[in-house]
Image 1: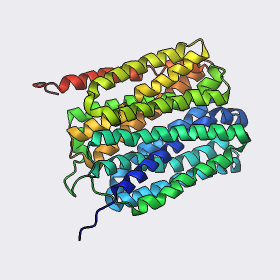
Image 2: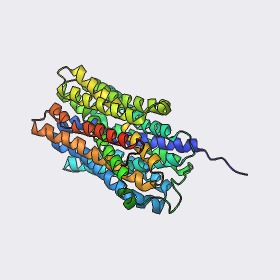
Image 3: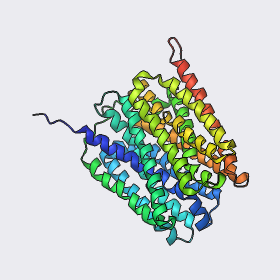
Image 4: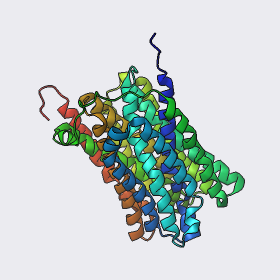
Length: 398
């Protein structure tokens, strides 16, 4: 008698995996100004938090193919949730135990970034391998849970800070660590299928020789930079540049950004079969460009916050859209392809926030000038998607 597998549990585990990644990526940025004031860390040094997070994920992306092949997806995902919990909880203690507070923060960032990197690479192929219909829409829905996780950590943290005070942020770090601990049980028991048959997946070398794949790499770099730059700096930008109270700044800035990014992904998840993906991505890239301009030059706080939120909607489709196109175009890409795409996104996530932090520092801690420094990423993205659309026409050689 054949026993039906419960792939709904797999889907739930991957959803919570992306929530874990959202906590790892977005909790510390809510404390950038707190770190600056309490520990005396400069803005350029604080930018290292985002850089170290994404560089660590970048390294994990590189080695993930070997890890997944040697230990299997299940063991890697269980380990990812465990180290994510350890890193988040450690953030509450390690910085105060070391004389160099920044070093303590960065050590914890490295630990939970390892878990975040594994989640980022492996959850997408796990979902792709499940026997779901309309996989492109399913992929967009999966990535929307990163957004809802971001909304949850921002709204939940804001409520916690309002009720108890931001000085108790260490307690909240331990609370957020409970989510990846819970998800360990889900990944330990859910059905997981291989993305391609053993020995039939493309190697990294084969992928790097494919012209179309290089375009996807550039898209992922620009998508990662456009998204992460605004997401990481929105809280500090609203508080220091727009002079908005932290509670309202976090809700309208990074939280609004995440809500609209999630809505964008949900809309494509629901109506994706009626929408030309490349057109949607070009229009989104153009909106992102305008959003960066509006944010950088806003003289009125509400306009700057609108720019932050509109940017969220504009970048929503970029990451999952590039993954979906790649999986459809190169079905034998396997784990190596998903790892390289994640690597490209993390390169963008490393470059973008670093550009903003350093331009802001050179401009006298002017975050509006820093935001303007990242405007080239969405512009490049629009150009790349236009090229990809031209390649997709009949009788056009890439």
